Length: 582
Ligand code: ASP
Image (cartoon, rainbow, N blue to C red; front, side):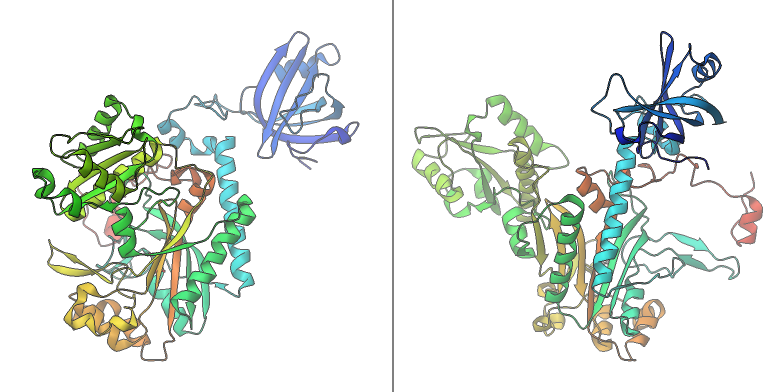
């Protein structure tokens, strides 16, 4: 037996027991005639003691051990002289009688400490060492817990976890596919699934009316800080349901996860239409931890001789409570913030409400105290508050104001990480017009059902059709999204037509689904949650990479295995791909 206990297990009650432990050498400390070793495994650290006077030979051996050596020791649990209340095993240590080196270790490229000295890149390269550190171990434990609790909840509601294939068919809709050449079918390719969408719908047609899967998805998108080319979803689908059933079922899942994993009872799940979210917060994923909703000021700010407002399609104001004290410097910094190219505002107008009820604005030349009082009224600003105003093209101003609102929320400390504000955003538009390609795209995906009362508008006014689609948003993070699906063949054909598919294209790409709709497709709908992102939110960061055991870097590379990489000419040839001659 390699070990009788783990390194996190022994307590004062075990004193006197003879035990065997195995693990990694965290550190070796020599103190006079004594040598101490911290022995580590994923359960914790146990202190080993060696006494030169009692057993010089074994003590010498211990002194030669290096960091990260794998050792096995046997010894007796004794009470420590100087106890460490910070450690679970801090009341005991082991008086070692035998020590065996199971494997030596080269000097690790960085320290295996909570605060390591290793840079990002080196830690990615040696991820297997980095994973020994507590912060990463805790992240993976959290992820595991979330997976287990998800399965428990879903199973209790009779959902079946069913696997769907990873080698599927490429379709040009949605993001870019990763493709895999088929050796046996010359010139043909599989694609890796962006999601199991069509398969889960087919499972509904097969009668598995409650499906879920914790599943890997692949999207060949340009990478952003919080994106990974492969990521995990909790993918779900139900038959014989309406939107309300889905929202209730998955509010339940999210509540269960917060309760069981974090011990948190979530507040009410606010419901907000897409239109309201956009007009009040300029975002389809508003952070509801704080107010600062937008106020349209056109009626009171235009036609007063201030050109910037008069030329604008939309004048928006927000009230930052208690920010009336902002200094010139802080206001200049805010102006610089909105003028950054990523945000792109022309400038920022402010109005402070002084403690005596008078106003001090950056446009005092154009607006009298009375007029500014209207601004305060419209934005509900009180003495001590700061009104911030942006003007310009409606869509742009909303986006810019969204950024400014979030920035002010952060600056004023309103985005507390321990506060969770869940919401459903509902009634998304079905379609999005793309100027560049001059065609409609499905806002969610082409299988999303229009609101039944809007079906008639599909031909006459497609832009105004809303979908039975919904997103789950917590604290400004989109954690999940889904929709009620089209299950009627003619409606699906109509949808493809609106999206600019010819009959042949629709048949070629989605013929299997259209065919299945002929054989008794029940009404159905579903949702998928970003599992990595969920784990990151539970862990209190937005870095999903820290919650994936072996992630890719920002360039989509795995630095540890050095992938992607070239393949040999023989392999290329076998795959019927062009042989590269070097
Ligand atoms: N398959 C969708 C997605 O990946 C989610 C859904 O509609 O269930 O976004």
